[in-house]
Length: 411
Ligand SMILES: *Cc1c(COP(=O)(O)O)cnc(C)c1O
Figure (cartoon, rainbow, N blue to C red):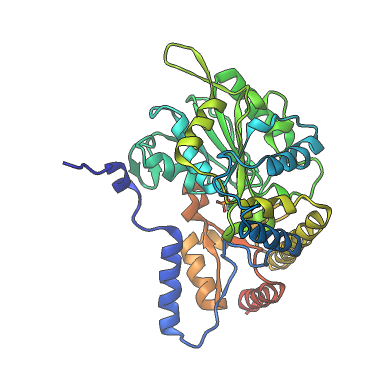
């Protein structure tokens, strides 16, 4: 008899964005003429930059010619891309990596979800709360998260990040965390972590034999010089951290798919009898078995981001979104709303006024201003009484949405 993996049945039925879509549909039935603007989108809207498009055209032509055709590539990625990553994303910040520590992938979601295969089923998991749902759900699917009650999993240690603690996860004193997921700049709060605060986590990890999964998907949005782009800017991190990068939000690759993961050779985890096992060869083995590489065309596209033209063009797109973020912060704050993030990330995390619940405010904003946001509670218990706005819209639609929010708030 084929028995189903019942851990899947524990996952909540409704995914946040389905609930949002349902509420928008209900609104549209009532007000068919209303034109709704979304400041809730989690996808980029600006097209790929010219340097990337040219590289893809060239790569496509190569694929059509027997002399330059590329079939299966190396599972861990082509050297041309891994060398560009090494030089531009790490060496430029004084971080020395070996090329075999870089694993090119089809985006960060796959690897942030898959990486937990490297650790035993009974490790304790720590997450900042609110959080990108993939980290918890991927652990639920194999039974590591335990059971759920009131939106909390029994084997997950939640580290609340709220205005009260400056959105900084506090190191838990009562429970040992075997594995911790950190994401900075953060989705959904748009907040960042300083080197000093990140150093506390690296030191905790080294001292307590904790593994850090560091999601750097938004590092390209960092504007302040002293905010770390990589956890390896912290001494000792190569012995305790795996880091995830993505070209999705950096360069508009959400539909193209490419990213990479760093698994340092110095990184080890223990067996039950105390032997230290290097994780890099394990991840290599895992990828060779379950992954056949990102496409040649995607990897050539990613390489183009590191050319002088590519860098300039990508920077312009990021500046475009960050202009939205600045406008949003200025307008919302002038209306008296309490806002966080948005300075080094494309997300603004806003406290709902008068203790309104996330979903209540979502509905008020939808019906009052015809603007969509994302309810903070959808990202975890500590997201209650907050909502998320994204800066991924066009300048025009963002400006229009802000005007509507202003009229609604004042009126
Ligand atoms: C968007 C996002 C990713 C990247 O997803 P891709 O699979 O690379 O498109 C990873 N982590 C977080 C927190 C994200 O918001």
